[in-house]
Image (cartoon, rainbow, N blue to C red):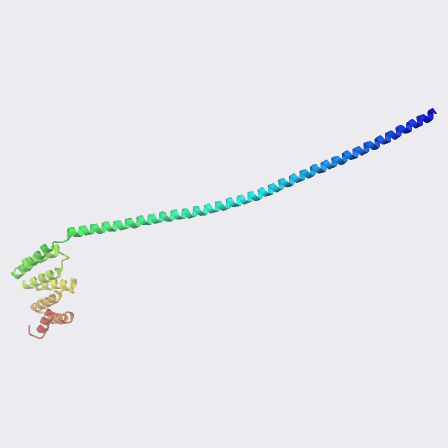
Length: 251
């Protein structure tokens, strides 16, 4: 009886222990499942957060790249504007320098012209005095004062070298020497008229005077050749008409 009771008690205890073990396994499994669920949830949450972070970083990377590109474009635009402005400044500077050089050249030219005009005006002969000097020398010739006439005409040439009367003054010098019977000097004086002023109205008369001086010196052939040259070079002039008469023997 005691043995049966002990066996029964032992069986009950064993059954209780077995049940207790089964109970503990279920709890453990539930806890493990819960833990797994929690870990999965945490992992999912972490993955979602990581995904959001990656998306944000990607978006920010795109925005940053866009911003960098815009900054590069702005920088390139600013550089282009700077180059344009620099070129404009350089062009303006060159224009200012060119303008300064041009104005300086014009100013110098005007100053030189003004100085030349002033100098010319200061040195310009008095036409009244010039006319009187010429007439005074010619009057000496008309009065027969040939030597005085020569001196007066030479003084006239020295005082008024640009006068329109210079060829006439030189002619009268040669004519005065002819009147003084200094035929060589007369020829030399008239040759100067022909050399310096070949188109002067006095040139034909000078050539005629040369022929006269040659004739007076007994150089008939040379005188005749001079008259023939006079006819060819200055036809239709009063001197040419006289040359024609002389060649015809009519004096």
